[in-house]
Image (cartoon, rainbow, N blue to C red):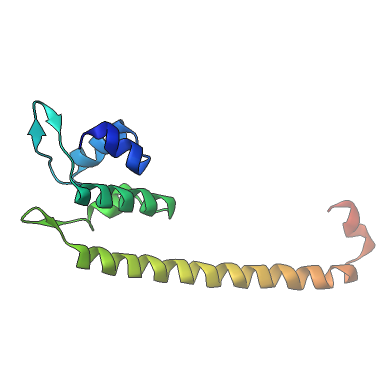
Length: 121
């Protein structure tokens, strides 16, 4: 399939797709009459890139993760990477929960603050 269809299926612009190829995030694509031709695996990798970006993963970090061996994506490596991202997000959630708890404690005790602070808040 051609880049227009890939763009529609992934929600990525043609410019972004070309950038990902230049960066080595997707394989160098075969061409038919000067047009890049994409396979279903390319769609899967592009969807992974889009989802990872939504999670805050940088393209440079992805570049170190997405690897091809003889033209085939190393999905085991990506699987481990996603487990690592999940762990990072869970740690972030714990940190945020602790901060929320701290704010809750402040809110619960704010009535004991001196009246002079009301004008500052």
